[in-house]
Image 1 (spheres, rainbow, N blue to C red):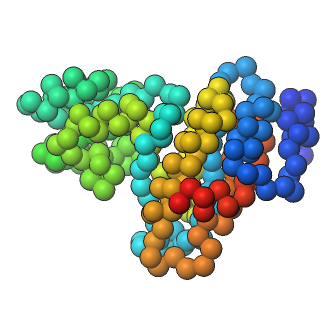
Image 2 (cartoon, rainbow, N blue to C red; image 1 turned 45 degrees about the vertical axis):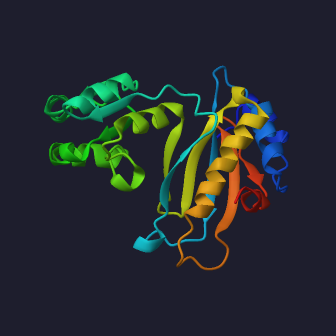
Length: 234
């Protein structure tokens, strides 16, 4: 059995594992017990009452966190012509066309966090789908990352737009900021996620939709949250 370090033991002792905390209280507690020497990411995990094996229940979407993620997002844009300049002016970190496709394909270059592509570039981008897809980087029109409105897409990503997708266990894992954000900013971000998840509820999903919610920091213990937070955010 793995041994628990002193820091983790002290953190765990401050969490009532049998209690369902209100969202703000849970996030405040997560920040309080975080003891790492770096600014830990706070993550929310929401178990949904869906069957991800069913195509119409594979919950997926995007949301712009009002206070961002606390992380510098490196955005790559596949575009050509005037759309290249538009992407550069909007703050994209990398902009190009077949040259970047070749760099990713031949060199395995992946020094970016998000990808946007104009529709006319998808023929080229499709050639590296097997590289981008498994890493969650493949542009998708349903997520607003295949678009001619590249400036808007880049600005949203830089501002804190994130993508979420239910995993095989029916759980959505989403970062909602950094410990340093404090209670109010973390709660605002978490509420934005819960509201988005509520809007994304499949019509075929029956019964309890948001089964359970938990929050934790990178190195900290999990804190259970009352699902009433989801109803309030909806």
